[in-house]
Length: 124
Image 1: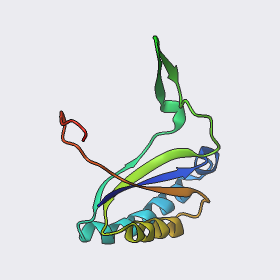
Image 2: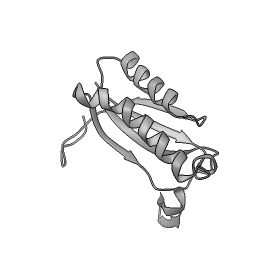
Image 3: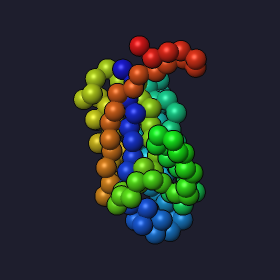
Image 4: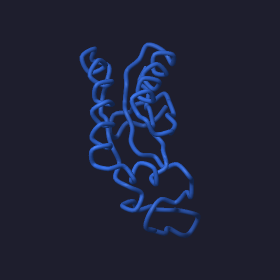
């Protein structure tokens, strides 16, 4: 089963890191990832740019609006994600626990199973 592990935190916290602090967190996270890469379990990993770089398309009946930034106003923002192939939710949770231990900032990891479709394929 493929899982998305979505990483959330306050941008105020992560943007306050010095380059050295950020580099250390990224090295520590890479060390966690390495074992999963070697086992052929880790797919794409993405670190998102800050929400100030985001654009949102909001659609309601009869109207489509494009706005700067994220639509939702929240204390935590989606900072990035991992795709991981696990035999169970417990294995995906173990991966998220390891990421959490490698990252000193208080944040959260949402684990969500994926349904993949080929481009142009209709969902069941």
